[in-house]
Length: 315
Length: 220
Image 1 (cartoon, each protein chain N blue to C red):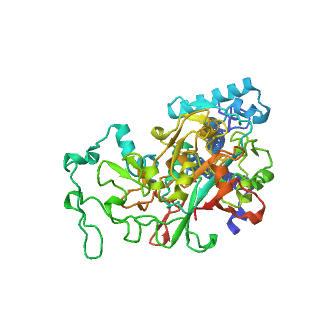
Image 2: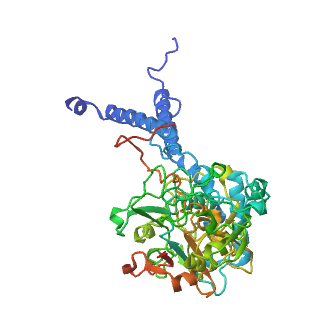
C-alpha cells in the first residue's frame, strides 16, 4: 500500500490559512499605520507643552520660588527655539502708580512708526502678522469709525483733509474682556494694566469678542519671529513669545513701564503725539494734559468701559 | 446591487475588508503627507525697514550737533561774513527777503503771512552767531526753546511741562533720566511745519487680493 496524502491537510494553526493570515496582517498593519499617522499632529504639541507647564499654577498663586522656576523654564524654551538666551523677569506693579496714556490727535501724522516699534519691542508674530496698534484715517470734522480706513498707503502722510487716530488696548477701568474670561486668564493689575497670563489662556476668544476697541489678537498659528528681531528683554506678563492658540494685546510695554521707562510706541513717535505717565503724580505730563488740555474724554465712552487712554487736541 | 445581494456572506466580508484596507492606507498617506495642511503655508511678508523703528529725530538741532560732535560749520558765520560790518538785506517788490545764493538751502517759510521773512527777526544783525528775541535778549544758537518761546508762548508752556515735543527715557524720574528734545530737533526754524513722510506699511490682509480678487495661499 502506498502512503496516501489526506485529501486536504488541516491548516497548521487551527483555522488560519496562509492566505487569510497575510490578508489579516496587512489590514492590521495598515490600521496601525493609519492610527499612528492620525496622531502625528500631537508630535508638534510636545514642542510647547511640558509637564511643568501642564502642572503650573495660576499666576496669582505662584510663590516667588515657583515663579523663578517658571521664568527659568520660559528662558529655556526660548533658548531652545531661538538660540538666544533671554532675560525673562516678572515685574510687579509699583505702589501709588496708575498708568494713563494720552494721545494728541492734532499732532499724529499717521506714519505708523508706533505700530512697528510695538511689534519689535513686544515680539509679535511677523507672519501671520500681529499688530497691537491700528491707525485709523478719518476725514476732518467727524469721528465716525464707519468711515475710518486703516489700509491707507499714500506716498506721504499726513494727507490733506484727514486726521489719524491710533487705537490700541485702552486699559479700561471697567474692562469687558476681563468679565467674560471663563478661566481668569486676564485681569486688571493695581497699576491699571490689563494683563494676560499666556500660560493660563485657553484660547476661547471670548475677550476678543467682548472688546469694543478690537484690541485683542489671537495666535491662529505658531507665531514666527525672525531670530535677529527677537527682543531678549522679556517679562512673564509682557513680551515673552506666545504659543499658538492664546490671546495677546497691548500691555503698555509692561517690561519697560514697570522699570520706569516710557513705552516703545511713545519713544518712536516722531511727532511727540504720545504721552504716558502716572496719573496719580500731579507733576506728570499726563496729569498736566488731563488738567489743561482739551481732552476728548475717551473712545466710545458711552459704553461705560472708562478707558485709561485719552485722546486730546492742542487747540 | 443585484450582484452584491447574490454574493455569499464570506465574499461580502472580504470585499468590505478590502475597501477598508484601501481607505486606511489612503488616510495614512494623507495624514503623513499633511494632505489637510494643518500648518498652512503663509504668504511671505517682508520684514519692516528698520528705519521705521528708529527713534532718531527728524533733524539734528544745533545743540544735538554740538553735543554729538557733528559738523557745526554751518554755525561759523564769520568764516565767510566779516565781523563788525553790518549786513544789508535785499528785499523784492513784495517785501520778501531775497535769500542770497550762499544760503540757497534755506527755505523761507516761517508762518503763512510774510511778515516773518526777515532774517533779523531771530538772528542778531550785530553778531550773526547769536540769536535775538523780540524783547531784545541775546541767545546762543543752541538755545532755540527760549527764542521760539518768545513768540510761541502756549507751545513753550506745553514744552516746559513735557507735553509738546518728544520725550524719551524714564517717566519715573528717580529711576533714570528723561531725554528732552528742543524745538529744532523736529522743526526747521526757517520752515517749521512738521515735514510729511512716507508711512510705514499697513496691516497685511490674511488673504491678499490681486486685482480685487481673493487668491489662494501659495506654497512659496
